[in-house]
Image (cartoon, rainbow, N blue to C red; front, side, top):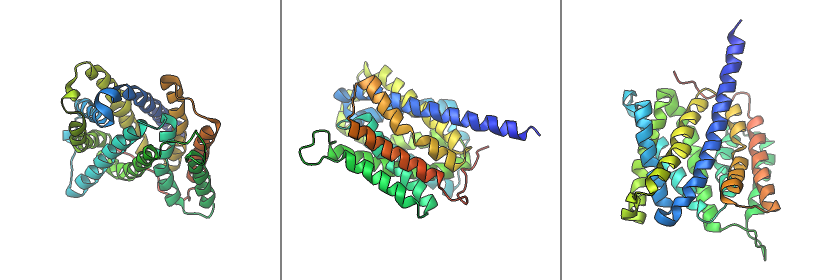
Length: 295
């Protein structure tokens, strides 16, 4: 008789954790941009993931995880996807406003949601997303268009995000939140060569350390741990619907912390992508499997 209230409380907790994770990661991205002039996007990603991996290893003690050959491969792909997502996203932030970069990156989760459903109505969501992307492409004498190279990085981050979702669910089913720590460690190992090649000794600049730790906490350690908890305890449809508002959170963070003012067409583009993602998630087939819970 108490199962329903307990289930409701668990769902509300997962929703709250996911909302906190999204706000945290976008605030961290705003802070990270202050490091770009010194060590670039590559160096910023490297420091973020190194410090995040140290924090998460101490908190989650991933050495307790029991890995088989199959689960190790899954965790490795998950970690590489995580590293690629972070690196490409920061590369896009060099020339693209935060809210737009998040919207473009979100085409990855949107593709996952549409693939999971594959109904006729999905063409509507594809069309909405396409309209959003077209509104962001420079045309003619338009001055509000975005940098195409930056947009390409953001779309590449979206591809990595899709793999992060797919392999995160599988890896989380095996080892729960410890997967987040393992994934960040692998991501740090994957990205560090890029950071060293670009920034070199500048990575050791003392004044950057407190900022890097703050970015690591806000953008990686806190949100990815919370997302892993939510991802493995929340139905896929609910998770996808809530994640759909992240481009708006990114745009608001860019406005509040970076003074990035978007045009009306850019806000419309973001809303088109959000609506496409919400629609694709809501119309998922009833056979779509929920995310498995971790012990």
